[in-house]
Length: 176
Image 1 (cartoon, one colour):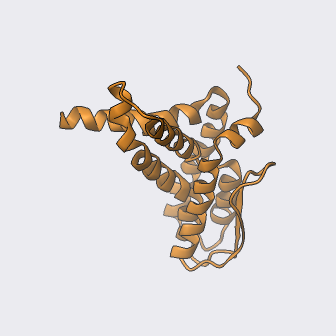
Image 2: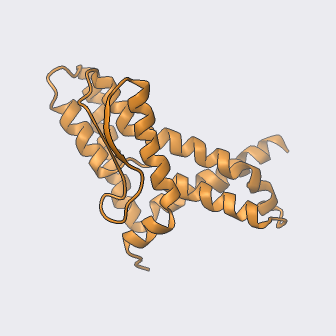
């Protein structure tokens, strides 16, 4: 089933907002000046953060991959309180809303191809980038492009569902 990306982005916009917030958060953590932030817009890209060039190459890797960590953690935390009522069939409207938000945030955890290009240009082509960082960055960029291809077969949705529903289910199995 083909659904235009713009429709998916509009329906899952909370995840886009958190994705851009994660980039902004890592910029702030590393003291990288931010010139402009667009948390959400209709169009391509759906959001962005424009910042100064980073001084420390490691910071570029964290700024680029920050959404993966922040979105994943936040998606699990948002959905966790609703997972048990949903699993037991006793869910309220709020529980379904929390699951929806968790899935949306989880869906947008993958860095974008724009993030990958920025990391590639800043780190792989950078003269001051240590060899070990290039060795880490190359497969990360490759995984980002694989994730972008996977989104054509709903990989991002499956990831969001796994984080929002699967992770809490696994934790419940361990505790119960």
